[in-house]
Image (tube, rainbow, N blue to C red; front, side, top):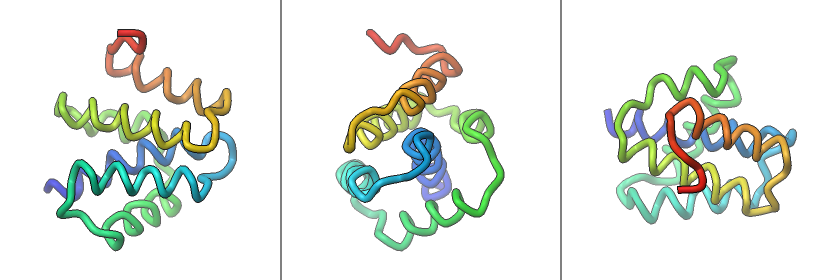
Length: 111
C-alpha cells in the first residue's frame, strides 16, 4: 500500500511539472532525488512505473489529490511538486497548478 501512496505523490508532482507541456530531465531527476531521500526503499523501477502510469492515464490532478488523505503524505507531495517543478524554473502554469494543490487541501502556501 505504501508504494501505491508514493506513486500518487509522484503522479501529483508529474501533473504540476507537466503543466508547461513537458517534464524536463531536471524535474524528473529532482523528483527522484527527493523520493529517494524520503523513501530510500523505493527504487528507479517503481519511480518509472509511476511515471508510465501517469502518462497512460486520463486522470486529472483533482483525481489524485482526492486519494491522498494522510497529512504527512500531503506535505511530502507539496514539497515534491514544488521543488521538482522549480528545478528548471517555475513556469506560470506550473505555479497555478501548485497553488491548486494548496487550495484543494486547505493549506496556506505562505505559511
